[in-house]
View (cartoon, rainbow, N blue to C red):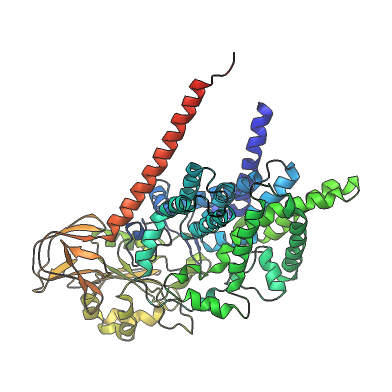
Length: 619
């Protein structure tokens, strides 16, 4: 019994060790800030949980749990725990895919998968939804590739992988469709219905928020870096991230050589994968690799750009995310290939050859150990940020974030390029740029805030912009002293702004004469009582304007709202709640899925107890 427990604990110990080895300095105090990795002291609940923008629902539903955890242990700690648990779960999941293999073989599969340059790069750049999906994938794979065998388990793993968001949903869709096709359509309607319902917590918010987004950036900027032939070989080793400077490992000639070696081992070992999912996983891996390369290979990338320029095709824009479907098959296949190769060598060399996949995994992962080359070094926000946040929270209102850039090189984060942290740090209604500023997409907007396009013309005359700010409903303007902040100093000449905080690292301004969140046509402030974000009570009145971004779906009572010329929510005259009806769909979906999980688990426990009663153990 003791030995069995130790064997079961061994992969978890290895997974925990890997997590510590990768996180390294990140385990110290401080926030993590690098590209899209933004773990602020408190992480706000994503508005996507209500199917409400303006930001796209990339963080739903996992981001809700992360936000709740941040209120208990702090945002940085919650984020670090999420990453650590995901790395450990990915390690154990890959280990479990080969239940009949020896320890060196299972270790090779686990290291190749959980420490792959693909996964470490996504950790470093803050794509924690992708990281979580990759962690769940090997656990869900055997079930979802045979979805009709046990619908109860198919439901539970569909929910689990869907809980990681859109990437997990795509992973699950490929697995389930592959399984349905392999089963020649048996129980197809039930299986697809079960899977689709399980995805509703991210699918419904995604449908409503993606439709309100502005013109997105050119998909070419997110294409897999896969030149022929060496780039393709590096992709096989876990490389190919679209932002080349952010790629962790699998680079240069060495990455290509290791990629080629792993492919040779895969060819040798794929036939030895567990028979229950061997060929189905091979098909899913082929789909994943084909979609990964489609955005980067000459001849087909133009067609892929056309696809991902469409509203819903944009979900595949960063196609390199789908490499996880290939890696979850490649890692165990390569490990088994080493076993087959070792069997053909002299006995003295067998142990050495069997551990080659694990060695290759360590070599590939080495650049990501101990902080991913500095990407996971903790940073501390200047104290002025907390002081400014306190002022805004005491008198809440829409906040304009300057400098007007989606990404900033932050001095207090070792000059790393970071997604503007103001929206996450301050929470609430923050108007910030969502334009990545690619030269061929000068008017791109990655969010659906109609107020955003009103700001750039004002930046040229900040010395008298307060009237325009007031018309946009802006109550506060924050100016961290980062990048080109000196270009905005004309704001100090505007008498319509009061500088309430002036520090060496940040300035905060209040717009004089701000009238309130909801104002009628006579300029009278109306009382607002907000229960939750998509449901508020507003005093009966004639037509009024609410200083929040206008998106389709808002109602006053049963009457539709409109948009003002500046993108604010225009309320019709009347009474009754002001509410966002798609939120009801999102909440209903969450209740159905959560209730379904509870019902299935409870039913399984009852069946287990009944079996124990009917078939007691012999004396």
